Image 1 (tube, rainbow, N blue to C red):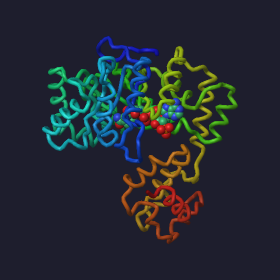
Image 2 (cartoon, protein in one colour):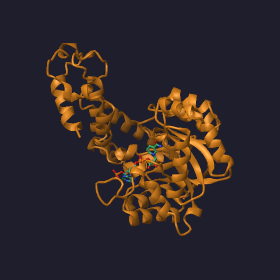
Image 3 (cartoon, protein in one colour):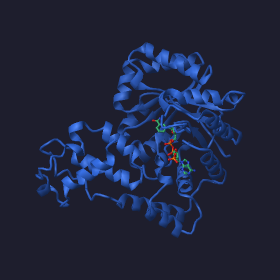
Length: 377
Ligand SMILES: NC(=O)c1ccc[n+]([C@@H]2O[C@H](COP(=O)([O-])OP(=O)(O)OC[C@H]3O[C@@H](n4cnc5c(N)ncnc54)[C@H](OP(=O)(O)O)[C@@H]3O)[C@@H](O)[C@H]2O)c1
């Protein structure tokens, strides 16, 4: 295992951290964690040098923290630094923060959270937590030694990221980052900004939640043609480690093979520098991903407003995302949760008024039907 300096003390974190958001399950129920197997995975990771574990109050419907707490019995707790998060959505009074925190200590079977994050900050979430004086609350926990370092994880745009960075002397932060997301969320801009303020950055979703490990054939061909023997997961992890300003990369491994594989990749990651040729191959892969559009919508919005309220470009973007990464989970969730009922493809009446407005001459009603069939729950 390789290590990098992380944070305000002399801690050297393993370059690979264990993300406990995708633990193995006994059934379809996300709370039904296969505890013996999750314990084996976490202990193998720790025995192999991983010393940072990331969980959250909400993962696995509240059961991830409990599973991590159990896996870290028998002396394992002392071998790692533990990160967990305050769920802003469950905080509706200042007392909620104390209640949730106490529950987390119980679940994790510990007296201290080494790295405590405000979970999934966006502008709305940050404003909400500030309203409950979250920083004063966290400072009291830091003073009491119940929190070691304070940070936040982030899901919004670069300007909001910079604003949050500027509003507190954070010990660290956590962003979604991989070779496809350099212009998404905090993105490269955010990473550079945090680095310029000497704030350590933890990366989440280095494989884009697994999508980059399972590409379609056209992407696989580019990797194969390069003649370099690396798996798609290996390319993505090596890319993440090669980016300046990144301290450690979390991976949410969901079985023992993935743990072994990612340990091997981390072990062989050498100087974490990718060659010019490697970067050219990744650029080619990125272009192929971006070029692959199942529906040739340019998001120009000329079709809008739809007479019946359907958000045509948003539906097409979700579908293209699903097809591009060969992964429907995220887009299905977005279709159900980010769009109001009347905005979804299913609300298309087939009136065809949009057809004359589309510069790409897309058969919009037919395509919307396809989107609905693919993304409905
Ligand atoms: N704070 C936040 O808002 C937030 C948000 C997201 C994540 N996180 C944290 O960050 C951690 C990392 O994010 P992530 O879990 O999305 O990481 P990721 O590495 O992008 O995705 C993990 C998934 O990639 C696949 N995978 C991992 N290793 C593989 C390998 N060697 N070969 C093939 N496939 C592999 C698995 O998918 P399959 O199971 O499909 O095979 C696994 O579930 C999370 O576990 C969580 O702790 C935090």
